[in-house]
Length: 296
Ligand SMILES: [Zn+2]
Image 1 (cartoon, rainbow, N blue to C red):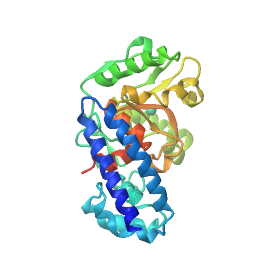
Image 2 (cartoon, rainbow, N blue to C red):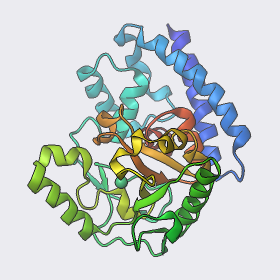
Image 3 (cartoon, rainbow, N blue to C red):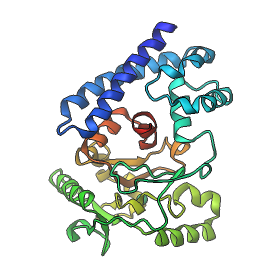
Image 4 (cartoon, protein in one colour):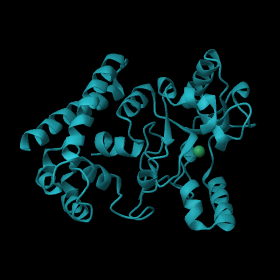
């Protein structure tokens, strides 16, 4: 039993080093393929742990590379409520903040201009934050007029659209940067028509929207509405290709418990090629990625 847990720690540490290293590396292909192999092994090991009695996983938090000593009591408390969770998930979920309800114990993001910024239901952007490098998305790649993204994300989106075109698909931007006040009216309108509980599953409260970072874009194809993107051939291409252009698909069907949002196959978030490749290879949400590899 001890042997299995130790081998997980060795493997997850190796992944952490690769993933964090790839953040700044100029090229990442060899790193990513190595990480993928390690991840496959890691997943197999985690499955073995899930089959073990839960008590076996409790005492070794400090051996995990993404353990935060300040959160020890929270790990312990959370593991009592969720004795069936793996050690890895206890640490990850508490680091995210999931031991508290969404929109509680929230923090204001101190580095909103960071390309790797994590904006979710526990981390909000300052009310007055407006990225200073917003540019209009190329008209040919946009289904809406005046759609803006931060410069690096806009350039990457152009490349993504070109890549899709070469493969025979059309991907168009439908909504990009949204200000705090635009998000506020959008959310309030949804609450008025649909109630707060429903609205919270598909619309972010003002300050908590990735669209305010200027790094998120909702997309559509040429024929159906953006919220049907998941049913299109374009999505089938996108789900295994957007990471090559530095984007991740942020909200997937299985991740509502972590992100608080229903599936949004159309919502792409720019994080840069290296990080997107790592998140894609790991097959986890960006919230989990940050909780494991970017949180100090
Ligand atoms: Zn969106």
